[in-house]
Length: 229
Image (tube, rainbow, N blue to C red; front, side):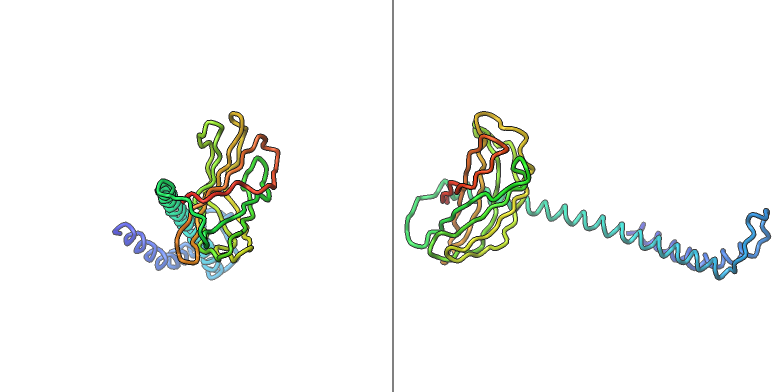
């Protein structure tokens, strides 16, 4: 804080004394003809005023960019923490889950619509195939596992264009996924985990899975989606 006050006072003193210093220098006899000028001291002050204004704008822009970057990093940290908490909640729910076929249990169809090569940033269609309304659709994770069940790549985030769906309605999902470099083992298992709330406000957890044997293929089949919590 003390350092900021000193810098602020120094800037104020500089701004106050600078015009007087420029006026004094302007009226000195130059040692060489090269330094002789044809413009008035007011033009010189106007030039430096514009230059300092530009410099101030650049400094403020740089500070804004740095602050936005730090804010984004903080937001990413919070999002990552929230995803970890959701994954933990899902693990607990899976262990306690008892399958039920009662009325009002949400059901979904998940279809891969495309990707940007090697399954980078895939996008899906998710359809509510139950009779009730679901809300608060939330992304939990999207990962790729090799044939030994080891996670080899994991998504950072996802975006739903809708978070509530009536029966038969669909939403689009975009996943921030780095993509795959090669098939490790016999196949790659893609696993998409998400959650939602039913009409009573109860939370349900789901996993959609698809095995792939080639990075160049694009299967538009419905993924195997099951309730796990």
